[in-house]
Length: 120
Image 1 (cartoon, rainbow, N blue to C red):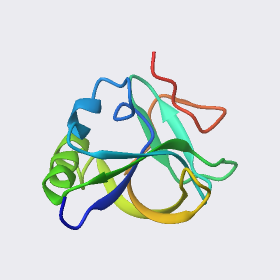
Image 2: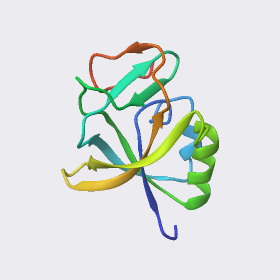
Image 3: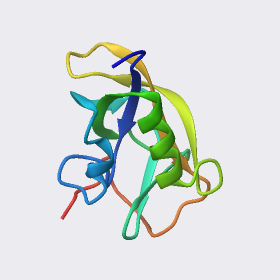
Image 4: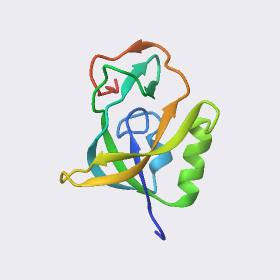
């Protein structure tokens, strides 16, 4: 994989999620958590937003190629439905990294009380 790109996923792209197939060629680095605090809302899918009274969000960290990143942009409706931005995350070994993540333009559904979207 040339020039891998780090992506943080927190919802249906995680292992066991119905969109995980979009990461078929990606390399899983492990579980991670955002350094800064954000808020998750969820209806059928999670929505990450910036909001007061929030928390670190937990998810998974992947290395992807540029083609996969463009596919994820299409899946997430970037830049209209979700907007891809870089954030600081704490990687599986506690190291701080910069990763791309998708923020929702506006929250939908109910506000989750903690930073984990559980895949049923």
